[in-house]
Length: 110
Image (cartoon, rainbow, N blue to C red):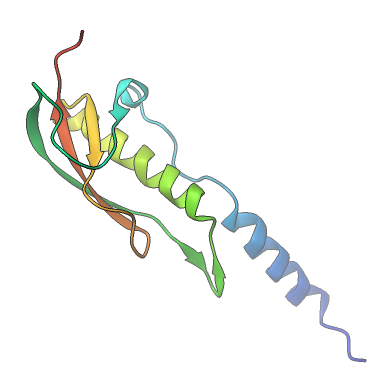
């Protein structure tokens, strides 16, 4: 049986480790932006715009965990919402190929 070169094995291991990591940091102010469910517009809120975000959803032939991809997309949307003055983001559809669109809203606080 032939042995794979050590460098090749390490490259595969590194690809799997990197694929499992979260690379999107939460920016200042983004923690206060809430993510609401897709659907009807939230009552009493003002639409401020749309946000499109994208992350890597696969590394080589390895598909990343869909929940991690979704989390990263939401984090990126929250980061972008701060720049728009929005306090709420709402997905327009499910993620597709590592990309997702969100609506940005400013909503009254109760």
